[in-house]
Length: 148
Image 1 (cartoon, rainbow, N blue to C red):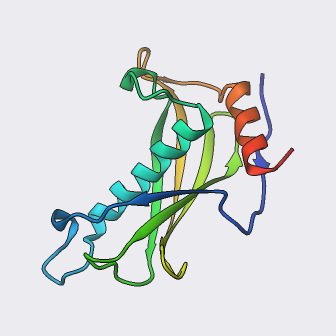
Image 2 (image 1 turned 120 degrees about the horizontal axis):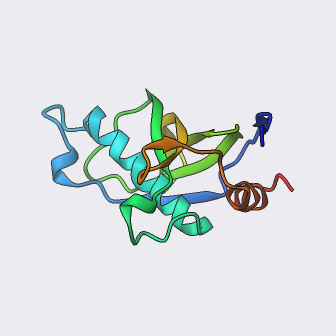
């Protein structure tokens, strides 16, 4: 079944995942290295998926999606002792892909440190093929994000 893209504009994140900054995340300038930022948003995305019941965390081959595109805007350096959280939300669902937005914030004051976006493709790791996004995923995301 062919579905048209659904786009939703939102002003808030309904899901946040705290992320621990590790010593190994820090570069010689004493802030989080840009490569580790992608890992931090990955942690947020994984926790979002588990929170919504889209992935049980048992088998990598049942994960169901793969990164197709990633963009990161580094607004303020993140330091070793900062307490941070990653906001995660789905902003667009297409036929086989969805756009996920992220916002890394200082836990204390909510100051935005980094913004990011990934395009995720629904992917079957057993057959190595893209698949339409399942209707139950669409429903769970729509309900959680308040689109319904």
